[in-house]
Length: 361
Ligand code: UDP
Image (cartoon, rainbow, N blue to C red):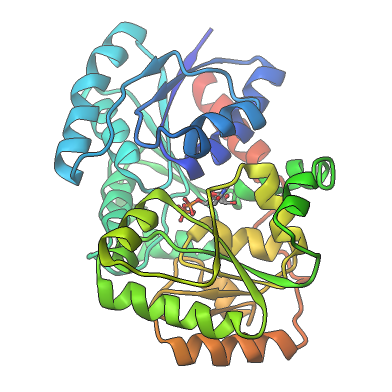
């Protein structure tokens, strides 16, 4: 039986990989070995997702974390090489744009093992973002490029990918399937949210974790000022990413917004279902807000998910507190149309079928 190796390491990758992993187990056309790089390692950033999303335990954990970008990527590569030599996979699958994505793709490429990149073609055109560097390089050395949107396909065409020896496929966004799967379970365990004292339709859900927002004291303070002014009108709940918590401690930022520990995926879907609006710099959360019919304020200067902005369902607000508050007020009162399907039909199945066909060739 043909074998794929899935290389993952960060929270959004567990969520996306769970969709494909479930299909692999139910269809049984090929096998999967999971390699966790260790990039995210706390229980509430890693293990909880394996339990909740029923992802099989990783066969390998490379335990690389808490390092600067170069050391982290380099150590992942060093530890991954013998694993690929031992396992001899027919395909390596990587997700998104983290150091784990790039490390997995680079090692496989140099061993002449084909690479599939899920979430290919996304661009912010901001090379100061580590994620942008990771995704451009990963795309260039992948064989199968699964694009979530037409915009992603256009980005690749513009960069000349049409002339390279690889296959670009418009599949839709795999996250749509993870949200659909969990929507069925909504309300099963709302106790956690009750404990937080939250009522449906009475709060804003926020997440902040991008390096560009957490590395500058001025920028992070400015974002918290914006969240404070929103919270004068409506409660703001902020599950704090460890990087943001560390930055708040370092810069001694105090805030009256309700900061909580990172939550599991089920609780996050419940929060998305019950909130009024999302304020975020996360790529995944912008789309999840849309899947739950909620608008979002994107605390960045650009987004990879342009179709949400074009449809008027997300607004780019940067880190300017006044813009944040004004956009919150505007989006709150505006009639919004969530009926257009922006992210494809059964993207997970589409990706699975393409991989199965590739492995049969
Ligand atoms: N998420 C979660 N618990 C949290 C915060 C986020 O389950 O406390 C989920 C969220 O629902 C989304 C994903 O994590 O599916 C987004 O990951 P993240 O923001 O870390 O990365 P990005 O999407 O920006 O790459």
